[in-house]
Every structure is written in C-alpha cells, then in structure tokens.
Amino acid sequence: MTSWRNHLDIEFRRFSEVGSTNDIARQWAESSDASCGVVWSEKQTAGRGRRGNSWVCPRGEGIAATYWLRPTFPRTSWPQISLVAALALCEVLESEWSLHASIKWPNDVWIRGKKLAGVLVEVAGDDVIVGIGMNVNNQDFPDLIRDSATSILLELGQTIDRKFLLEALVSHLHQYLLQMDGNWSDLLQRVRGRCPLSGRHVRLTSQGVMREVEVMGIGDRGELWVLSDGQPEALWQADEVRPLL
Ligand code: BTN
Image (cartoon, rainbow, N blue to C red; front, side, top):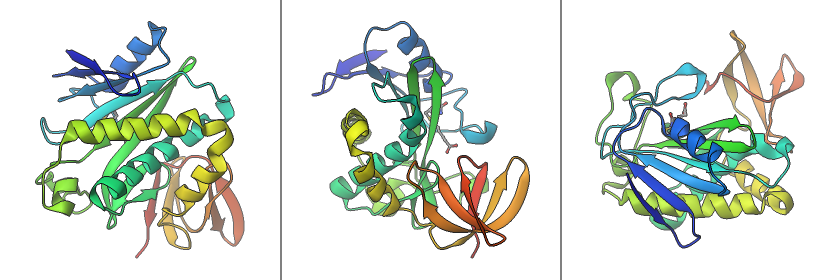
C-alpha cells in the first residue's frame, strides 16, 4: 500500500488488490480520528454495485475508489450525497476535458446515454462511505454491457491520468460536502440541470414491481418525482430507472 496527502490534507491510500474499497474504507473510518480519507485499489475481488450487482474494474483501466467522511451536516441530508458525488464527477469532466456528462438519478453518470460511472453510498455508524466506480481508460467492455457502457478514453480518444482525475474529483466533492449545510439549493440546481430523465417516460422497477411512469424532475431533497397513472409520486429509491425510447 502507498499513501499520500493532497493539497487539502486528505490522505489517499492506494492498494494493488482488495476485496472492496468500500470495506477497506469502512474499517479505516471505524478506527480513525480523521474526518475523511480515500481508498483506491487497482483491483477489487469483491467490488459491489447497487442491487447486489458486482462491479468489475479491469486493472490499470478504470478507477475503483472510496471517499469516506464523517459529516458535520445532518443525517437527513445524507441521501443527497450520491447526487453530489455524481455532480462533482460531471463538473470535473467538463472543466478538465470539456466532456459533457449527465446524472442518471439516483447514482449514475452518463455520457451520450451510456454509463460512465456509478456511485454506491453506504452508511457505517457516523461515517458515510462513498464508493465510486469509473470507466476511464477502458478500450472495450464485456458483451453484456458493451452497448450500455462507455469510458473517458472512448469518448475523448485519449488516455488520461487516473490519479489526476481521482484527486480532482475528491477535492471537488470534499469542498461541496463541506458546504452542504448552506449550499444545497445551489447544488440542487446544478444537479437538476444535468438530469436527462426530466420529461421522459421511463420503465421503473421498485420493490420488484415494474411500471412505466413519466419523470417530472428532482425534488427539493433529491427525490425523483414521477407521474404514475396521472398521480404525482415521490421516489426515494428505485432498483432501476430505464428511459423508454
Ligand atoms: C453501481 O453503479 O451499481 C455502483 C457501482 C459502485 C462501484 C464502486 S467501485 C469502488 C467502490 N467499491 C465497491 O465495492 N463498490 C464501489
């Protein structure tokens, strides 16, 4: 393991192989007096996605990393952290590489309708564990996801420095989360501006039930408002939200 601190004094720990960076981050958080840290691994043998999916990140190509923090803002705002993480990634891609990305509620980053990254937020006591999987220098994907996934390399036609990207993302996310208390309405406006689902009909799977609804937009606390059989309904979590053509 190698470790270093960035210009904000956040400690990064980089591993060659772990089970899941979220688990390593959780153990670190539980035994630490620090308020945050970052775990990055070249390979995960048990990388987790949402809905019990696994997350595969080929060595040297993607980024599998976890930023953990002990928030000073209220727990009622913790569900918004995954949207803020997705927003921070979109903004870094735009400012550093002029790539326009959007946020597919609740936790994906898309480019041109394809998945570039996913966020998995877990809570451990007073700590929040923000796992991020990003397709960065991936040249290709397995058959199952080839049509639905993309990478920065495929979008940009050039490889990029993964350490630079991760440090930029963590800095941006960290500063946003420090300002969560007073700044949420500004962040929400930015999130809403990157929501490609608004006004679209989607197929929604929630608690094992599939239905088609129309997306109205993202509500004041990060929830998704939909019209289901003509009735407005707020969703706080959904297994899957897939736009219909
Ligand atoms: C998803 O889109 O389903 C979320 C994927 C999150 C994957 C990342 S990779 C780093 C961190 N460690 C894990 O085990 N999962 C997250």
